Image (cartoon, rainbow, N blue to C red):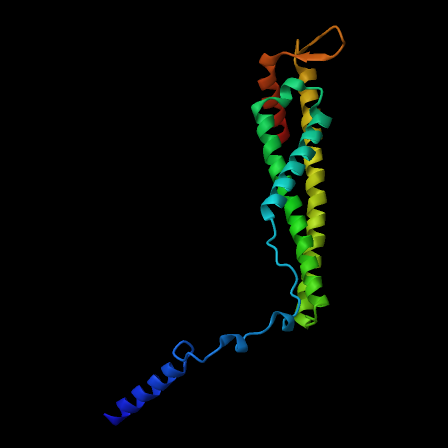
Length: 199
């Protein structure tokens, strides 16, 4: 019974020595003063949504200008649902690449700032080298992707022109000398061009 009593007394003493149970205790004497703390700078949350929105807009601008470059003479074709969906999908893929490149760049800068703040461990330098290698890969992938998109629309235009040239009664000339494509043949032209591209 005395062990229990000793334990009870010990716990009671601890409770009595805690702040709040003693009215003479002043916690402000135990806290760091603002002047003693290092300047940690402003802490701000990064706005990833804004970057995603900007990348999406930029991706759409690039793909729309690419479509205008290669399919500008086919005004009806640019409004076709397949082409509209393709533009949206290509813009989304391109925007993701832009966002990924920006985040990799941000990551490198953050890591370099860590080194500037004194984190000079071998592991940190290894991480930085890996991030730089990844950044190079992203740049190569971005260039390849842009070239693939350009070639895709260029080839699509060439296939369309071949299909138009092979169709009897395929086009009419208007007074200005431009091409007017019969809208009833437009879906057939797209289907033939897509099938030709797959072959």
